[in-house]
Amino acid sequence: MTLKERREAAGLTTAQVAKKLDVTASAVYNWEYGYNGIIRKYQKRLARLYGCTVDELLKEDGQE
Image 1 (cartoon, one colour):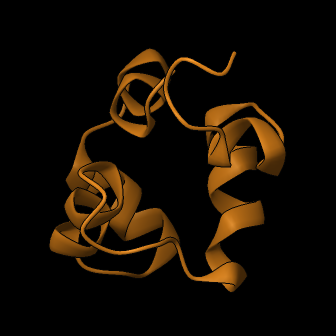
Image 2: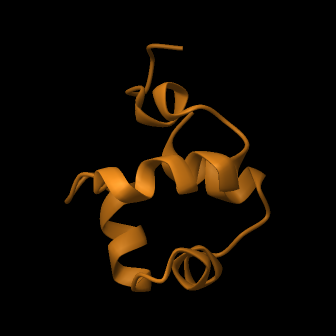
C-alpha cells in the first residue's frame, strides 16, 4: 500500500496530515510521490496516524 493509499484509507487530506504533523502540505505530497524521504522524527507519528507500523509505512509497493 502506498503512502497516498494509506492517507486516503485514513480519510485524511494532505492538508490535514500536514496540520497534524506540523509540516507543509507540499512535504506530505513529496513523501507520497517519493521526491523526499520521510524525516525520521515524523515516521512514527505518521505510522500512528495511518494505523500501521513504521516498517509497513516504509515498505515499497509490491513488497506486501
